[in-house]
Image (cartoon, rainbow, N blue to C red; front, side):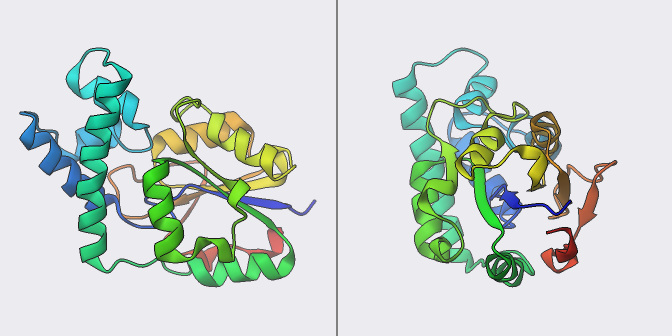
Length: 216
């Protein structure tokens, strides 16, 4: 039975920006007297929401007001780095998205990024070419972090599909676990050169050109 939807994580998946996020976290962490290795970042940070990341780093619960200020500080650093980098969408992403649109496949984004970053991505990459505004799910403070399946379940709901009818593309271990927990019909591990590789028992791709459109 053909898949009817495709749900994409964004950071490290549609946008191969893991190195940029790591650089932004390094600047932020140094300012606040912390340091994490790239391996530690892969477990503490990648795929997670800022609330959970910051409380793990500071090793204590934080008031929402403080979380918001700290998160805004880090994300502003990241957006400056991203803008200066000239980064584009991942290899094969635009071609795949155009093909899915032509086939009538419903597409969504399910990202742990906050709204301010999502708004930046929408404008920078003209995401409304492929995604309806309602089909972009982000960290609004009501969802649990991956590996909880909340973001993917909400994305499927907004597409008016069940997860078994959808493919999910992810780069992080937490994201793969979330996709499995959601009950995705197909999972693609996007090998964007993070330390989360390799991830077994899912299809690993290094370009979106490798996605088999015959699945849809």
